[in-house]
Length: 355
Image: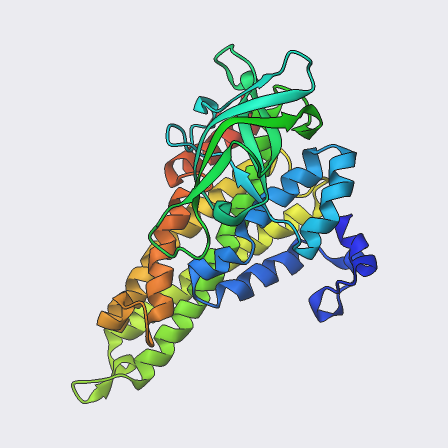
């Protein structure tokens, strides 16, 4: 629905796509083409934080907040990020410690706590933030707040494996005053919102990783044709052709899996936001990062020293190699997602079924 406002804002979707026709396949193509740039830190600086936080604002924020902030986000006048992970809790979302307590007049929340590894947090204007509003010690304590950068909120950039330009940050909140109108949904509904929002984020990570893998393999194929060793091109060596074939076959299986899930997202009410797709998307991301690790390994082996050099002909392979492990951690670790995919399958499995 936000896309329908693009015309009045003077924004056109590339390719002449009408806003009402834009779906997850269009988004998939955009992320994959960005991925082919082969510079993961730069790619994430183009809107990874926005891409995983704006859906949460659209689905869970109040109508007044959406109407006021939506156009600013679409035009790029303001930037939003997802602020969930903490030094004390990553995949274990229920263990989050950041707190939000209402003021005596009930008009504001006072928020304190730390968030860490927040993509694009260093230059964000708004933080979609998971906080603890209750004291029962259960996931029902969690709520989501939209926090505007202001007094009491400080960000410090974190240097990570792949690049600094994506603004990965520590977010330090010390008695930040947040209007109660910025509560997203109801108090205590934060855990469910986080889980729902994770679906799109995990799908997006898989899409970008597959795009980066395609470019890395394309560069590796070209390099193996032009690189001479022992009087022959690398590609004349059977072992090199075997690595290329294995990587290409793996990429095609990932793409097929991705398009199956994407089609399901297009046809399912609510898209990626929902309980039913949590398992398939978790498995997609798990399978993508596991498989991409082998593809990256083959590409680096074929490129040799250039595959571990940040500049030059192997730069995109070096970037892909770094991002694979990054993608395996954020958005939910491989171990958590593998477990989630099976648990979600068990939930729908007929209890009486047996051999």
